[in-house]
Length: 236
Image (tube, rainbow, N blue to C red):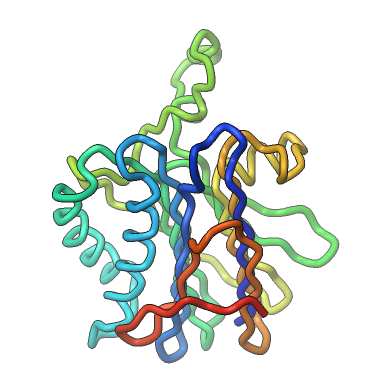
């Protein structure tokens, strides 16, 4: 597949706390985007979680599946306490079955996954898990500033939150987009230029085609995982 990675540090951030990783095993492609908060070692958590989950999954003997990924995530989450006790993050994960053209989407937090076909608007496949979206009563969060940043579910070292999964068809002409909230909310929804966003803004794109990786990032926060190893992809 053709892979694209765009990532920019927000003007209000000390460093870029987004990260992504992807890998291929047989007829399956696995990709993940992680968007961490600045508290604790957010940058370290984002890079660790994305590359570790993908790398471990590629090294498993069994076929890739959402159930297998959850088992890996549950085990790896138990190991976060030593180095990432105070860090939290959102992440979205996609597993593509190239033979069946099936797409499995899993997410925790406020990252969004969407499909974009030629000439059409992005069709978002999930909803952000934040206080703004989860309010029971209309206007319940009106007095809470930036309630979209208050996550109702997150990746953290204290409690495991299993990702919500769904499955859909991946059309041959579609582009698959994994977006951090800085990208989908500030850049796409609010129309802020990428150079002016306040939050870190990142997008990982996948589409059918000859294998190529195109990187547009201000730091080293993307990894290609290959059967038990992690490599730094070169810009194409």
